[in-house]
Image 1 (cartoon, one colour):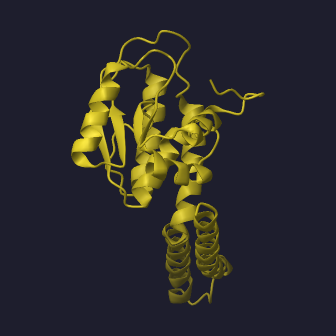
Image 2 (cartoon, rainbow, N blue to C red):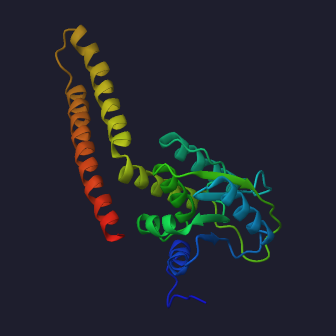
Image 3 (cartoon, rainbow, N blue to C red):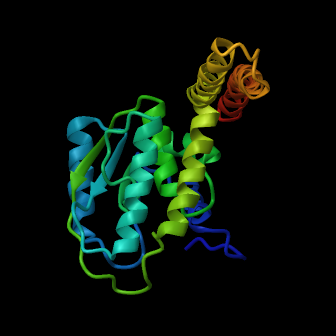
Length: 234
């Protein structure tokens, strides 16, 4: 049994468990009794057959309350907006990891409830084979779901943090070109009316250029940081 002296968070607990694992695969599962332990064998068999690096237990449609479902949809929408995400049940608590990869990736994952979505997206970003397998669920045996709108926005913030870490240009180029286009379109009207160049349009264009520069800088810092993480793990 592994325990922390203080409550360090959902993600921190999973990290400690994965670090202690010495098997080829490691399973993470929520402790609320919602999942059937017999499904772990099915995930293991599926992972071996497909040589998957991460198998996510897909719970399918559930009977969650409206707020929880809204939170899950927000998470999926933002993740798919920023990345190519082939997984439907991002925040499933039942996952089977290739231990070697999991130990490598947990260092960049948060200690919060967003860990579940975050580590799945890390696997996807590194082009590892991530698959889903249908699993059964039952009523919770204890506790209550922590997935709500507030937690969803926390997860969204962590997902954006992930994109900035791994693919900063995807964020900064979008913001940069959006600002430049808005500034240009806004300024053309003033020029055509013979009113000179609008201060607002010039400000938007300058902001766009600054965001582009920040994107290039973020890309360089990201490359250096990820290189340092890789070196530490060797």
